[in-house]
Length: 225
Image (cartoon, rainbow, N blue to C red; front, top):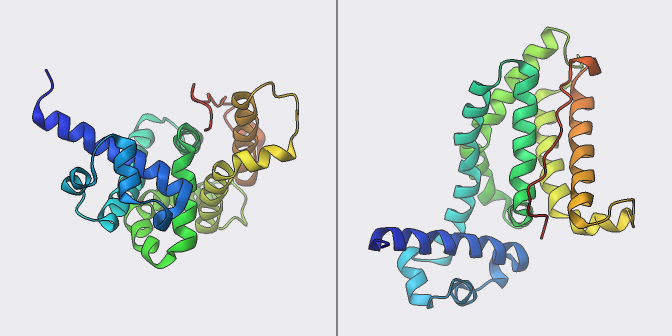
């Protein structure tokens, strides 16, 4: 039997999930608390019990999404046995995270465009720590001759994040550029985009293709919405 605490936790999680979806689809202004509550199957006062205001709900949605990396990146780096494996693990995890739920990418893109001043401190708190680790790895690789000497680590990482977020957020629109394209379904089309995205990221970074891992991206079982 579910306890009261676990029930509250489940409801809170559902609120965050539906808020992510509706904020991504309609924007912060366009998605009302009433709509989010209805999607969860509760009344607005019940939603406000968990999240006292719409601004608080928005902040929690974004913090939960961005905080994922502070927990995930150290684990991936610890498990990898080489610099190349570290790159592959983090790059693939980043793509997997957004492809598994494209609303995450759509919401981040909306928020970065609509409220850059509010997003900046969140990015500094939750994204900058792990991107610094990646920049340190790239700098070391540059010194060892494994990556291009003229690469700018900070700008490279920023561009790759932008490429993933924007690419996944607009995947449905970009599908118009590859009509048919040999992809029998949306799942296969998503894999095509993802594999090319990772290929571009590797090619832009490493000097010798032989140094790159030939890791295959395994797309989540649930295709993009």
